[in-house]
Image 1 (tube, rainbow, N blue to C red):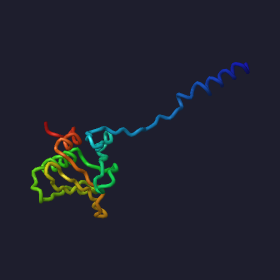
Image 2: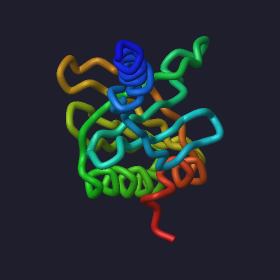
Image 3: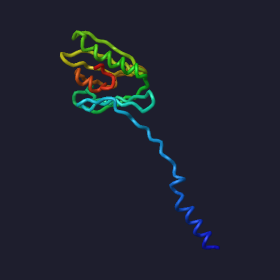
Image 4: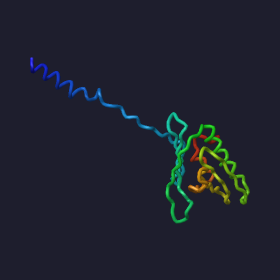
Length: 147
């Protein structure tokens, strides 16, 4: 009888591990678009939380990757894309800005590129600078561009 209890105890202890194991809750990011300079736009699956990682051209000697996280609706991201696309029609001396959650995107136009300065609205300090061509913008916002 002791052998049967021992076998039963052994099976419960060592074979039931997979039944007791806790399932990990992993956040999954969806890639919305990417650019050849390393910039990427991600969305947290089933949520309105975004990550924009970009090559920071704020300092000419450093080209580091900077990431910002913000909440927005799909319409807000689509409006940001439309704003940036319309910025290519600015004259060289004009500037324009767009606010989304806690960030302000200030745009000025170069000859064939736009320079986007990302500024924190809380501290009013520049966080970084992104340089975009039309092709780069379309690649970065691939899901939102109008074909």
